Length: 331
Ligand SMILES: [Zn+2]
Image 1 (cartoon, rainbow, N blue to C red):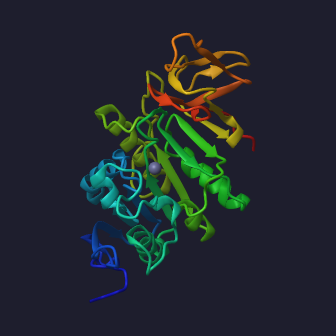
Image 2 (image 1 turned 90 degrees about the vertical axis):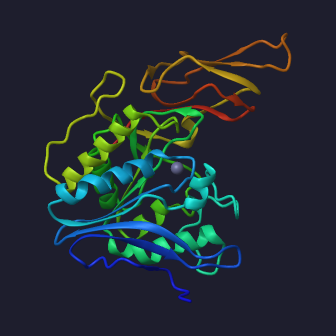
Image 3 (image 1 turned 180 degrees about the horizontal axis):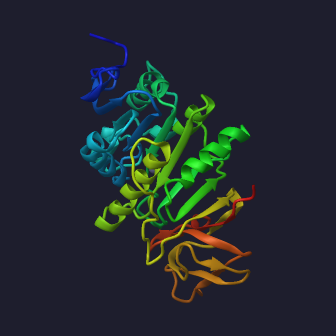
């Protein structure tokens, strides 16, 4: 039995190869084989595309599969590795975390060889795939309880040169939103491990978590735009149409930009993503349901900003997030 994570595909073989990333077994379960697609057209950028990091975000795996269909003809140079599903256990359960060990794969990087299954997946990806890529696209969705526009995101990066290159790469997707997301809970993220190795890492987020034809087309067009910008495929990058608009904006958001619910109840949104709001504008109403004498509470904007995420039809607890706003990125 081979106890080391490894590939059954030779990445140096020219052209298309299909195989698996083998994640060794452990105390909790046997080995996992994650399907991997490798396309080697020689010199050029080395790109890793992953999906299914979170199991309830299914657009990424579907877009990754589509890439496998047209890349063999479209790719002109470089090396692309596509791994549509990073965490098959979570995808099968339509669960953000792995049911077996309860862990969030995107918080356990770089993983642990002797750890539980989620840690072993992270370890295999970190040791086997990350070293052979210069750029990583990790395809996520924002989640099922939010409305969120198609976005290419990054977190702030200490190295200004890597930060600038990462923002440029994210903008090259030409999605409606490029978001620099200052976020407290980043320890153990795939992004951080890749960025610490000097790699350009873009995380795409797609709102809703409900897979639809229009959304998939926008998502795929964005990834194709990024391939064009990298020089991996030829063609003209175009803004995909999102809610009648063909445009893109680069914004930044910070932890204090999250609006929290003042009470427990049902949140009624009164604004839409990409709306500009000013101080005092009504963004939503919280309706307490435990007593009909309890008054509904207005939730108002606390400054000029752009709505980037809004709860859609969800029961929320007091102090849970109901909206996220952002402002143009300062250079
Ligand atoms: Zn995710």
